[in-house]
Length: 109
Image (tube, rainbow, N blue to C red; front, side, top):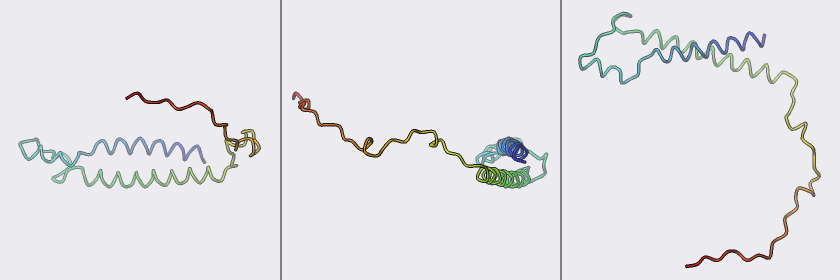
């Protein structure tokens, strides 16, 4: 189940990137005002309402797959990278180095 959800997550991510790149920016209408070509393939309002709805649906699927993957990870056997670290006693790590007798460097003005 986790492999299927991971596959759905990756495919959704790629589709989300492509759909966002297909949308025109907010400044794209300015070019049409000064004699740019009209895009009437998708009707008078263009493809924006469809692409915006598609972006919303794909973003919801992406968020749900992210949540599902995180739940799968939290339900698995938990392990930590710190389990393999050697424990040292507290008194060894709390030592302060001795102050040196050297004088600080003086600045020549």
